[in-house]
Amino acid sequence: MRETLVLNASFEPLSTVSLRRAVVLVMQDKAVVEHAHPGMRLRAASVDLPVPQVIRLCRYVRVPFRQRAPWSRRGVLVRDRHRCAYCGRRATTVDHVVPRSRGGGDTWLNTVAACTTDNHRKADRTPPQAGMKLLVQPFEPTPADTLLLALGLRDVEGLPEWLTVPAPAV
Image (cartoon, rainbow, N blue to C red; front, side, top):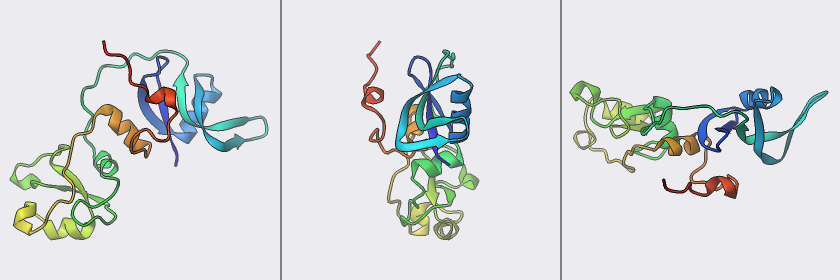
């Protein structure tokens, strides 16, 4: 299902929602479509809407400041683009670089996406002990990065220019 970026009334990125939720927000006049998928429309008996890619809330929502993106299994798979960190094939599981049994935790820097075969082969060992090499190093994405990754964008290639301009420094 398509993901839609939700902006606050101040154009600050808040989160991503499903296409269905985005349409409901627009239909209830709680949001407006800022950017739509080109050439795609949603049509019904009394409705004709562009398919939203970015929506903006009509009212400002106060959000506590987040310096770090929360860790999740889904987040790790999205961060690594569902590619195994050991062989590059499609990944469906999350592997702990330092196994949990040896003190490794559920953190961005200790987890990578892995295919089932490599996850089982590595088992309860570190990559050097298992004779395996990481193709990519794990990193901690910023909250803004996690929004772009959730939308399936590498950088900002699919977003309008006005959304990619950095905010002035305060």
